[in-house]
Length: 348
Image 1 (cartoon, rainbow, N blue to C red):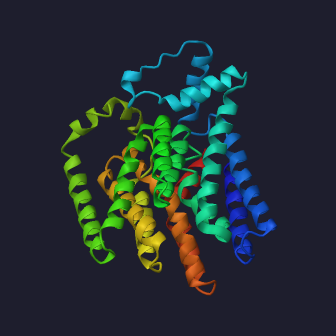
Image 2: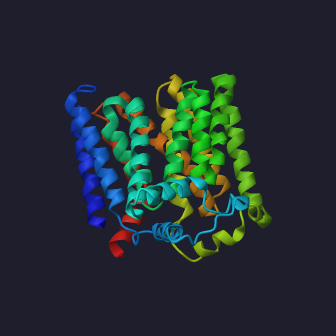
Image 3: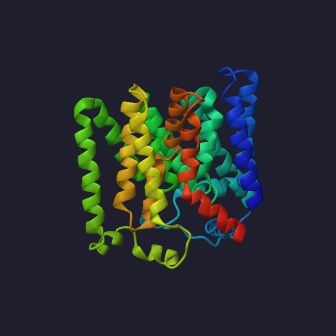
């Protein structure tokens, strides 16, 4: 499986290089984009349940539902299994299918949502955007998560819809996202940041962003002395992560977020930079800093990671092929979470 992951990554990289010379939205380009997306869906749906920490847990929940032995407590929404996963499981069981169908649904839904986002924002550079996504989020999100992965995809769509002034659809997407994982309740942080970019002049917004980042550092430092903060989330839920490498080190996440923000500052002024990429990059870094010492919560910053791909394609299109290899390889080079993840997969 590890070799398959590496081979697919290389295939996407090579495809990205060649397709970037093609004309926008040619039939062959569109076919290739679909083939790449289907390849990711296939890899996700066939990964089994013993390849990560969460899949076997969800399979056990699915089997409990199948045997009428599962009790869902709506009063403990934050710490229980959100209703979105349960609803899909009940539907799959009613149709007579097994847990592999649940995996297929979540894989297809997540990847197709990302395809829609990247196709609309990256156009002919979709393969590049997909490659950057593969390096920065795929293995640590969709490949090792189920409900959280889909929640992030729908939450990212909510941000895009808000950027397009489709606020009703954005709100609906936010609600649906929270039905799959309660962490989606942090998506409004990104939306508020986007709204600030619309109400404050660009010449002054930089001071607001600087204040937000400074405040995040102070909050992060104070959380070390406020362990009662986790009583809201039920700290017992985090016990199983203690002493494991499931969440990895906090530093790689921070590096990716810093590169995201720095790259966003480099690209030329535009509406997509000022009102989408920059506020999301600042919010992503702020969340990463706030939860730096608590990796399970630090992963909430992943809600902004798909926009790293959009930033990368903006840079590539602006710099041209004589210089863009520096930019193109900067993301996978610093995506150390991917490198460590592949190493652990090979070791297993």
